[in-house]
Image (cartoon, rainbow, N blue to C red; front, side, top):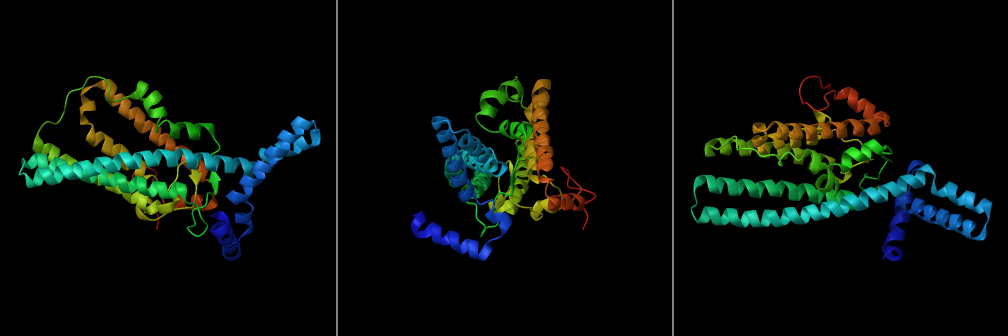
Length: 308
């Protein structure tokens, strides 16, 4: 397939969109260079050629090759994860939509119909969100302008991100800050109050989805694929993190009845604040992002001093 379509496309891309900064960081070329360096390194060790060993090690450990390895690692990990999320959310959306249709046509109580429709819309938001993420992680092209410019090289940056995803958040993080674990009681029991709360939760997640749509094919964790200053990013720099965390509080008011549960949810908020800070530390190496920070001063709260 590559010989028939890939190589000609590669030549056309180099001809039409070729730039030295891109060509020297081409994933395919750097991957081949890394494989070549690893081969030279191993051959040097086996044949006891110190010069070959040193040359191979220099190639394999060069910054550009290491960046390519990390790009592949990020894409593989998150593509696998998002595919699993998409499958789960699609099944949940399909089931909840069927339930909602049956609830409406069967003339169930108003609250039951309302709640079933809410669940259907809730899962639809994440079907779209994870679907875009799959495209972002599986497709990187100069034609889409979503090639990786840099990868977060800090251990702390990787740590706070991985805390939020399986297997870390289920096998490790939840054991220490599982805000649903301590015994709690339901704070809001009125059906009318819950019917007012559900649209607020959906509104938060719609802004979260708006942020994903603004990122589009540049969607990615731990990598910089280009500056996005449209959509909610015109008003504050981390709209997805802010609205997701607000939605958690609205959707889990029961944590307010237990000090440790509330503290655990606050701990999750802190983790996402750290994600925002480490992302900015990484992205601020790009002069364009520093200009964006000067224009959009608000980090997590969308009010006040954004400059036009």
